[in-house]
Image (cartoon, rainbow, N blue to C red; front, side, top):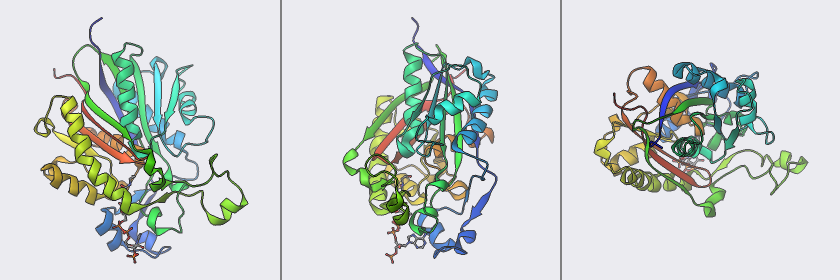
Length: 332
Ligand code: UT7
């Protein structure tokens, strides 16, 4: 059998129309536009409407990606949804997306690795393509974290936004796709990003509701140190697996958690900020959606060419990390 590669033939993104600026938050929280911009680079975030859920946002991004790839949803062989903010604990949100897309009986699964979920899912899709098991795969990163943060807590609520990004990965015998990757996890530090209650460790109850321990908590300083430490090493490992150096990469698409983390990575790796794709100012941290959202937006505006070599780098809850060198489409 000829060697198979996973070409990214379609891409799409969705962000809810409702925008909340830092100035809007000043009205309800002891915070300021100045603090948020200086400490994070965030200026605004998109927040889902009452009629929206994680699956409805995922479906919108998926429909755009399928249209771009000119692929009917019925021809999908696999659906992978990366999210930590599903519609329900059970059933899996991936099955809701599969049903809404009319992708009849297509296997669908949800990948829960926090902010690194999209890269984990993309690498998983690439493996299914390379083994010849599947030919057409939908990969979505989606997050509706505005329903899981405590809007009274300025340490978390100002940081996150809602969005979805999707790609279609299709088998081809022409070299492209994921050229090298690293996935990692250090569960010994799981407590740094956590929803302490509502799961089997501490089931939901009146006590949980009273203390608000079902909301997302983050030890920002520890996560910041972890992210700046892991960024360069994960990037170098993925590049070395691809047999490349950073000079071979056209664009770095980092997880958009904090502009200062990206600036530290730029300095650490000796790569100018102009080669990093940044949209945290407009969307805040959209967790698993941040990379596919940035990817789709920047291809659509012509900044990224599908034949460019990209380095995707992410870090988050778990703690987990992931990096992948990707050339979306074969060079003609
Ligand atoms: O996507 C998953 C991965 N997540 C990340 O990578 C996030 C990594 N961490 C970060 O981005 C940063 O740590 C944060 C943006 C979360 C926080 O920035 P920081 O510079 O680490 O601030 P801090 O937590 O050390 O807090 C500094 C001060 C504190 O006040 P005191 O104790 O010095 O008086 C906070 O109470 O800033 C205060 N503060 C705020 N002030 C105004 C915290 N949040 C706010 C706020 N507005 N929203």
